Image 1 (cartoon, rainbow, N blue to C red):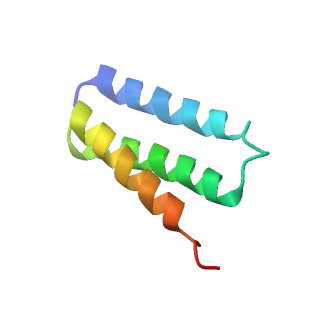
Image 2: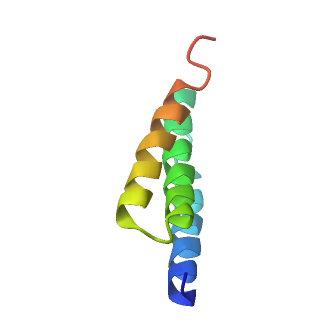
Length: 73
């Protein structure tokens, strides 16, 4: 992966983390969904070398997993 893609990925991840701090009125489930989607998107991007489909697929899978975490508490 080129340096510009690495920098872009890090900026995206940082923006996501900072953006989530503004979500204090979200339910735990909503927050878990957003965090899962962000983490999944970053992981998908890294694992596929910056592929758009990998990033979107990772975000979708991460969001679903984040949504289901602690569902039956």
